[in-house]
Length: 220
Image (cartoon, rainbow, N blue to C red; front, top):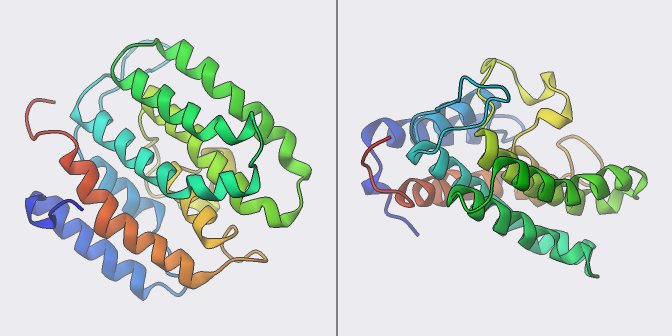
């Protein structure tokens, strides 16, 4: 586990405030505006002026992508429990590989997105799956979102909006991970609030510091 003392003051204070906010929330939610503040504190959010606006490589993009990768690794067993047979069982590892390769610029943005489509398509076909498969589907959504983050960075537009204000296609990797760990989308059948809280505590106490420590504090 990364040492919280190594966090810069701004990020450490944001993390402490976010932790208190989440514990005080009636659903133990970590709201999207707070998540965006934490994500931006990991480093500069650099976007190409070109179309499409692919992310520009830097410590911010790398840390945020690594944060998503930690989420995906955490919920990976949930996907594999629900979809144990090949080729589906290999999808999470494929998304992790694509994200790593994109960060190292071993593949182009288009190649990463083409690979991501191998999971996006099946997820769309799983829309008729029974409710008990929801944790697995949420883990899959987190994984395809990881590749999206490696290509475009996190979506920090309209930071005042809550997850409930967005179409589910706009939910971030962290929230999909929370849905997977919590057993369902908050408020739906099967949702476990204690597990949901446990996930956000892990995200704040372990994942954020580890993501910060994944890149030295130099450059942009």
